[in-house]
Image (cartoon, rainbow, N blue to C red; front, side):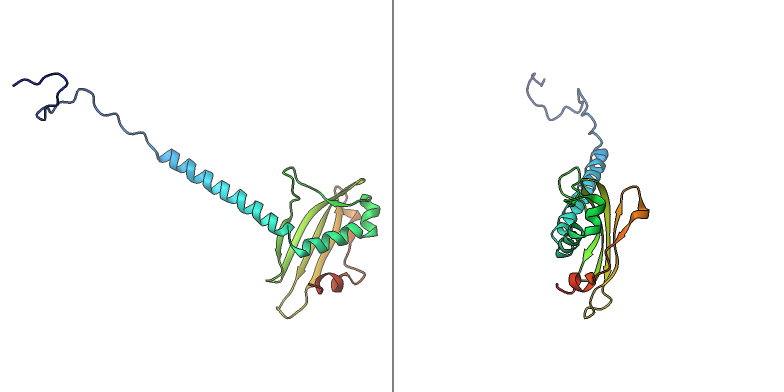
Amino acid sequence: MTSQRGHWDPHVTRVKNPIPPLPNKKPMYILGGASLAVMWYVLSGYFNNKERLGSSVLRMVSQRVRTAPEVIEMLGDPVKIKRSMFGDPWIDGIVNPLKGKVDMSFEVQGPRGVGKVYFTSVRKHKADPFELLRFLVVPNGDASRAISLLSNGIEHDMLNDE
């Protein structure tokens, strides 16, 4: 019995064309995993920054910086939080009033220049008031002209009104 062309013969054991080997998918899995990790890192940074931007501590600190006569004299009027190239201002650091830790920095700008605001405050125990450790405005390029905003009863006004 001869097999006809186009019909399947279960007794044929020879293969005319071998099945090509499957491509190695390992580099694709590594690339996909790495891109997911990078995307996770970028998005978590973005959302953490959005959370810092909405904090009441940032609003109080930026209000104090915008209305401080020393800062207006150094940077000009109006003083605003400097936006990053992606639109929103970038706030570095930690803003966690529930755990008693606020350590942040951000850039401000005015008509006469740009400066960086450094603000640090801690609370040792939940029942204790916040203690201001650092509240500086440092102009870019000239750290010798740094302005401390810790004076004038700011500690009581800012952090105990929460």
